[in-house]
Image (cartoon, rainbow, N blue to C red; front, side, top):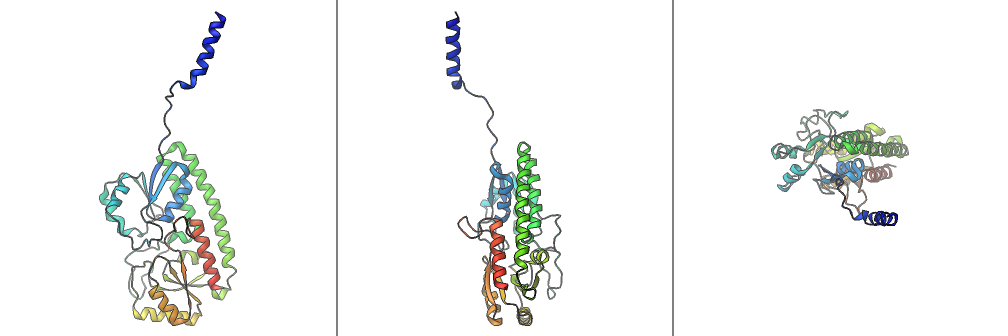
Length: 306
């Protein structure tokens, strides 16, 4: 009897792995849709393996001129959360989102942040594309830290099981942004004080200048959107300012037409310098992540202004 009992026990142990398991399957990753590639990258840093992130805009796309396609409706409807910049940047998406019937969590990452207010003295015309605030908050890593916290909150609300992971990831990413902020400050300090002046294709470096002690000496397009158009008088005034202040470079985003910026640079003898401004590059480009994007641009700006 003892031998039979032992034989039975041995047989049971051998075949135990063959017994089907009824354990629950792990939940599928959250489907997160970001309106642009910069936001998408931050979402990936926070969500990690528990999210699947897509961007409505492809790499190297100007967010100001984006026009949604009908296929974007299904992406908005099927996602668990839609992450937006806010502050008027996605104005072209407002009607599409409102009419989509999507039940996704909508998060405006820049809402409630200390945003720069747009003055109404751009030679008498108001920037109708963005309302009252400058949407280019990503040029200050400290504000992107606040994005990360908002994203962690949104993901935790959708997947409480992994809330701790999201908050840990956000804190880890915050540490990287703190390091980036210190590096940028050190780099800018190598520019002679009298040369810390930026002229760009449109008014997009306000947050960067405020944070790191540079001066925005003017913009080819006098507003926060690439869709505005300058008058001949405005261009002439900008060229006079560049000459008077001895500005050495005009910076233009890689996703916008450089024609006007090149004319200003040619007329004043300034160098025309290309930056990544509103979008990341593809994975094999120079700025596939937000951290790489900022390091590339800062290095380029510092080199041009020294």
